[in-house]
Image (cartoon, rainbow, N blue to C red):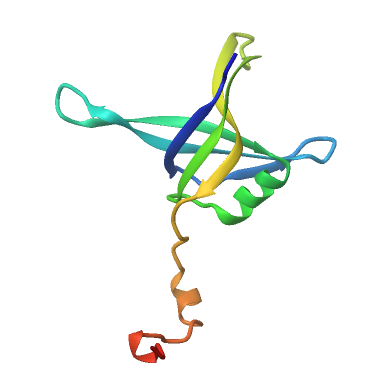
Length: 126
């Protein structure tokens, strides 16, 4: 049997870090993944996929990712059942990631870039 999924998309919101009762870190976030084809009216559709990471990877994602970042996620698809507030049985699909690659650089806030020294190609010694 094989259950492996690879996705590339952008975070739709900042990741949410929490800890289990036993102290294990778990982070969840959602990525937007464009479909490879257009609809009948010529528009590209997007899937919003929930991602879950655990332990050290969860803390790394929570500390270094934010809304809009481009990531590659590799893991397994998990379908879980739960009862909602009204007692109705529901199912949720999510990817439990064991690898997350950051595919872009974080955008700098204006106050952070003010602290960086000015550099240009004139300073390069070769």
